[in-house]
Image (cartoon, rainbow, N blue to C red; front, side):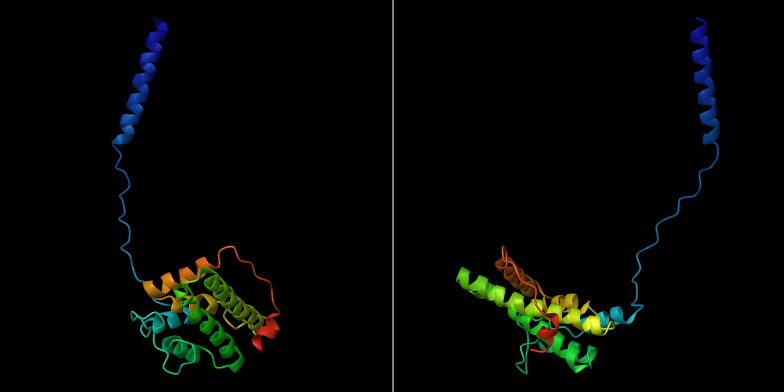
Length: 187
């Protein structure tokens, strides 16, 4: 009986302690801040925002290429605005041409021909990537983000993205050899 009384007394004390804490007001709950739009705070972000207003978002797969140089006009203008050094500009243009061509791979009916064309274009894109890394090694201000930017600009509509994914799918199971990056820049 004595142990029962001790247990009952302990429970009463614990209950009294927890009730005394409930009389204290809890700290006020703060509401989360509403979402805000971050404005560009560096040149890279500013270029990205500025360029989006002038992107070709037409329903055509390849967009407009009025000078027939293999690069969509909006991407051509972006490259011309961003690169004044002729070697850097040529490297980025070569990459953009290969990316643009990759959009047509999915239209090739014969699977083997599609795979061979995808492999050929992949090597061209690889040369562009190698060249970009070489450019960056001799001039660290050469922005390697351009590789992702060109891909994003090229695949800026659903139709273009699906075409690029068809090219990517055609590459399944293929392998590539490394090349000489310096040589790729001057071909």
